[in-house]
Image (cartoon, rainbow, N blue to C red; front, side, top):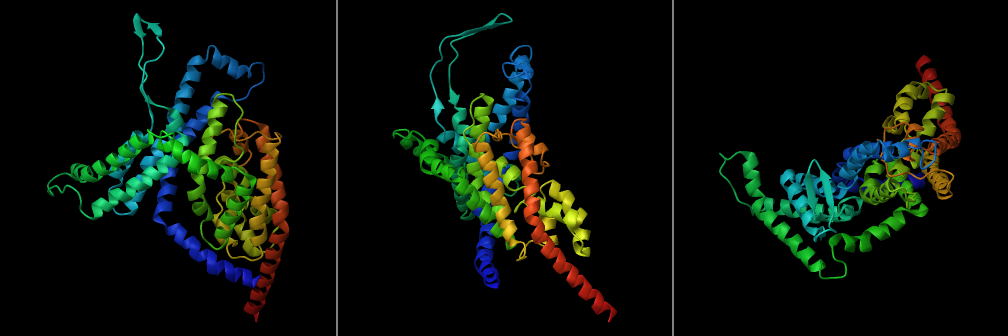
Length: 452
């Protein structure tokens, strides 16, 4: 065991520290995180619109929305499309913004240029639609022209182009600024105006570059940056990330990094979040259209079923401590770990018990998330439990509630979480008892030493 610990400390801590400080990964993580507030709003609209109720034709609620409640259905759809379908656009802005700031340049200007670059590389639709007419208050519209971008490229499918464009734009913009290849304005000019002129030359170069790229790609079979990245990157990564094997690998690496004191979720999340979000977007699109959802593994699947209570699925450990611990230290930690643990916040558990570098807890810390993944994946694959519908819950949403909402209002999601929590607690219990027993011995020795 000592050799294992030395090996983990020797190799994982340096790797984890370097990855945690990597500016590219940080920009990806923070830039993609920018989409979460709007996606949560869209998720709420998705849940309300498709909330299951008894009755024929999808239930009483669905029947009402299709009839008298059509106005509400349209309103909810606008919320859904206005949030889920701009994930790529927001990510392109956010990634360039954060990378430019990390490199000491103006993030806002870089973000705007990245946004424009994303639009340039997105295929346009031109032409005229089939003639139609709409009469309302004596206003007649005919032969409406079609011109714009397809949601197929601006939503979750646009995440990989957004990452490439955002990173390239943020880096190149900062490169120009650092080398003063910009238009310098007098100090008397307001900063906002000065920054606009600073962005002119790098903006011209970056936008021209992406325009040339898209023009060349349009002459190939790929047609666009989005399609070429889908074939070369998104499909292979989705095949890995969406598989049970991929989930186990990611869960194991997350636990190992956490164990040596490095935030494992931040490291693996920076790489896998685009994959999980794109699969989540595909599920949301299918769910909104009342079609079969294509993906078991999504971000909510990982957050709400694999990592119950946070990294290492420590909610089971917290429950075991609350119910069965006897040492003074663990008794003191009960309220400090239980309340945050219910909301998937486990830093007090990780560093208070501690779990970090605790050789007696490393086995369940790795095994429990893997067990959760195996059970949840199998249950959803077999149809016993409904798959996550693409709706994103705040990661602090307590279990049972989150399982119900994430599966589109199916009680099976909540039941699965209850089963997993019980099993997690049973697995954690004997290892917690070992830690508790050792702590009791330490406390006894301290008491004897104090009395001597």
